[in-house]
Amino acid sequence: MSLASENKTCEEVMQKRHRIEFPKPELSNSRQDESYFYLRDSERRRKIRFHDYDEIYRVPGLYEQLFYDRLKCISPAKVTSILECSVRQSDDNFTELRVLDLGAGNGMLGDELKKHGVSRLVGVDIIPEACEATLRDRPGLYDAYYVEDLTRLNEETQEDIASWQCNCMVTVAALGFGDTPTTAFIEAFNIIKEQGWIAFNIKETFLDKSDKTGFSRMIRELTFSEYLDVYHMERYRHRLSIEGRPLYYFAIAGRKNADVPLAFLESKDIMA
Image (tube, rainbow, N blue to C red; front, side, top):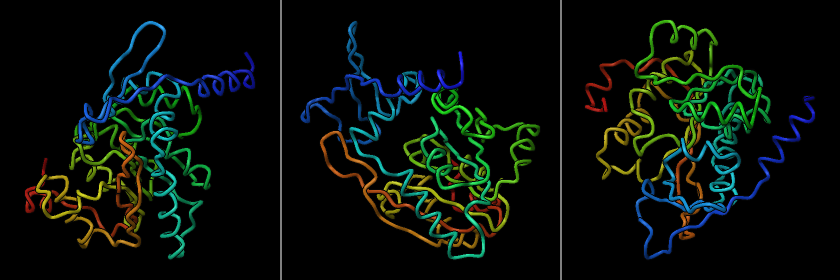
């Protein structure tokens, strides 16, 4: 099969429309991390939680149709935009960024960054299905893609990731809800070269002092610490809930000043 026909087949698969059904409002769970939908085909009606990414990634085009077509998610474009805006405030060039994409998923953020001309893309995700979906739907997008738990990296893999000399770390919709441990975020942060760029999004309530979770406290402490200079922080509508309500997030971009030491996390009691 020729490359052209392979690409055509991929496009046809991605354009397939799936039958997605949301629960009735009175039956849906108000907690964002417990939201679910039904995927119906000719044989069955299957209940899938929004955070069951492994199941969603196995179905070509389902992630895009659910979160971007139906729920109008704009976060990859928003985070890319504020990162680009931040880099313009310096003498650096956006096209020279070597990006570590933490929680890369099926490559939605990587696709957006590549459109804007970043130099290198290295993906990391703990879910094998994420890597498989990227290779299936966006072959060649990443220069390397690691299926790894950053809290349990062996020395060889850590050195291999570091050898890409990434000067930017990004992550979208992977922080909080137990998806990415605080220590994994810090491990990725520390892989980035000093004076490198950091860009991510976070649910607005995670920046509220009333949230006592370790992850929330880590983000607040880091954002206003000596280790990160914030260049841009913006509240925006991440996507819609299944009831049609806007879900607001903060997009944050800044510059790394230094590695975050283990003592920083221990002193703030945010090792979770």
